[in-house]
Each structure stands twice: as C-alpha cells, then as structure tokens.
Image (cartoon, rainbow, N blue to C red; front, side):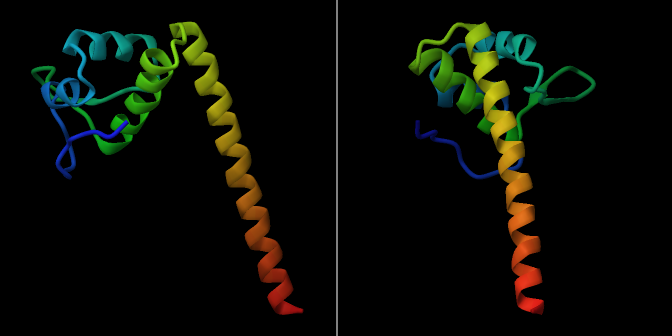
Length: 105
C-alpha cells in the first residue's frame, strides 16, 4: 500500500488516518490492541506518529484490512514476523563475522 505522506519526523493522527483511509478511532483502537504500536504523546495527549509507527501501522493494516486476519491472527503473524526478523539479524551478524575472518586469512 502506497501512503501519501510527506517526509517528516512526526505525523498527526489526522494525517495518519487520512493516509490509511480509516477513521482516527480505528487507529486509536489498534494502539490499544497492538502493544508494539506506541506513538509519542504530549502533555495534552496529542499523538505523534514516527516513521517506525507508520511501518507498524502498515503491517497491521495489511494483515487486518487487506488479508482479512482477525486481531488475534494479526498479533500472531506479527510475532512470527518479529521472530523471523531477529533470526535474520543474527544471521547477518554471523555472516559479517565470517566475512571478516575470511579477509584475515
């Protein structure tokens, strides 16, 4: 899904809901359901979404709205994705170490 968001550090909930073509209340609901989604809030409670938050929302939106997952199903898929990401990071570190060893030979 292509989002029409200008490049900047933080986005308002209005900008985010418009980009995803959903109500702001759905974004707030997803925040309660998906603990990984945690935008910054100021003293007044105004939410500010970073690019990392937007990426998480894209995954949630894709799983729930496009793929038709239930919230519980989407949470399980995200756990699997996170686990796979951790494994990939570890493998990349091992690869880097092996490349360095090879260079020293």
